[in-house]
Length: 325
Ligand SMILES: NC(=O)c1ccc[n+]([C@@H]2O[C@H](COP(=O)([O-])OP(=O)(O)OC[C@H]3O[C@@H](n4cnc5c(N)ncnc54)[C@H](O)[C@@H]3O)[C@@H](O)[C@H]2O)c1
Ligand SMILES: O=P(O)(O)OC[C@H](O)CO
Image (cartoon, rainbow, N blue to C red):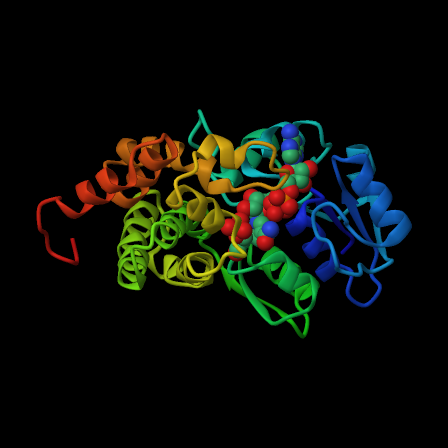
């Protein structure tokens, strides 16, 4: 199975490295000319994944048309750009493996739903889980959820990607796998705020547990399964990103917690903090589904500039309730 990768950021490059294990050819489309040159000439992605020596069997291209010879495509553009990039790609019935974590603004669609709308004949899979790109690219042990309704395709993709340091777990719950990754980014911002504002480790643990309850409520309301939310793509990724400054979302929250504005923090950054874009659309989607998500709503308020004391005070002053509710 020849794999193509759409997106030359940190995660697309790390996944290309996984797919290239054993000197297998991988074609990676990158939007930036400097990334294409850097990968083909020096076998590094100096812009988005510095310090990692890439397999020479990864070839980069700036032309989406070249991907037409691939047997499956890993889609690793940021969530808000997936529609535009896929619209320019000839896909037909080639399987698409969605690896971005987010919900599309405006439509409130999951990335897999966007892909299905653009390419109705393409089988859809989702790869998600606790995966800092640098660690994956360096071959450090990592496990992910690989979700696909088609058992044969799921198994073929898992066999193609698995290796000594990369272990996919199979699932048929595409929606559940996507929602975990999208919601955890918003919750990671909240945990960063707690760290930046010095609110303590108890508060962070409370946010992780109550945030997980929100993620599960929303995921189940959208048709996912609670067991998927409790797996690698949900709880696993939530634990990772809520506890490390290596997370772009956590570090965005850290800056907010230290008093900087979201606008200033997001300006000029070349890397993506998906939670900032997911938070407002998640608030809309939760309202639409009739799901209470107070922590995620609080992150929206903070991104819009509300004072931390007021937001935290309002969260804690809500009426007391049963934990399971
Ligand atoms: N970095 C990680 O560790 C990691 C791990 C798992 C999942 N992800 C997810 O993968 C997705 C991609 O993130 P990343 O970390 O590879 O990106 P990145 O932050 O390393 O790089 C930004 C990417 O955005 C792309 N981009 C910017 N503007 C664009 C546009 N107008 N159209 C198309 N692409 C555009 C750039 O080309 C680049 O590939 C995100 O959804 C992210 O949540 C990232
Ligand atoms: O750096 P973040 O916050 O985008 O997190 C990267 C991955 O999603 C971790 O699994």
